[in-house]
Image 1 (cartoon, rainbow, N blue to C red):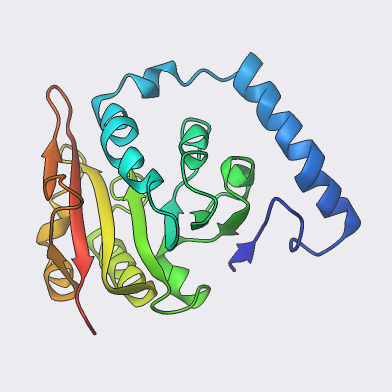
Image 2: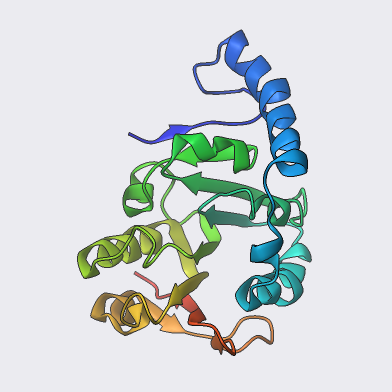
Amino acid sequence: MAQLATINGNTMGNSGVSSLKNQFYLPLKRWLLLNFRLDDTYFKKQPDRIWLNTQLYPRLAKLKQGRILFVGCAYYTWESLRLFDKGVDLVTVDIDENNVIWGGKNHIVASILDIDTYVEPGSFDIVLLNGVFGHGVDTKEMQEQTYKALHNILKPDGMLLVGWNDDLIPDPTELQISKDLFYKSEYEGLPQRTTFQNSTHIMDFLRAKKA
């Protein structure tokens, strides 16, 4: 069942212990891990990650309002969350409760397959779904359910980024459900599809059709 786990301790049981954990223990643990144990150098050098950091995220950083869902949290995505303007309602989600430490202040512990059972319908402007299809959400049925859930929570014409690897799964944008619920589109001067030399990673921009 989905849980909301905010770093400021407003939820997660609303107890004083949880509040202290979120305000002091998690930030300290995160700092220690990033500085003394974990090394994200490999990920920073990947062409798709370079594209995110130099092309997409700078564009998103210019947004002063709106609601964004960032799907999948890990130590190598943590720094990316800090690029978003404080005026943006940034919500992170990950199925693994251990990754709360790498989520934002508004973090949901849930499967992306049923995210629409937790957040309000038509409430998001942008969903960033990178490295999920083919990395847990692998089957056609799971991907179809994900498309349905994300279409439910996106506003009409809301933007969906789908990052996937063509050596792991067939093209998810060619699924009929994708064509029924979304249309292909560029984003702020970036092409609808971006591929990378010496990499199987592909980035696609889609927009939600009106229901």
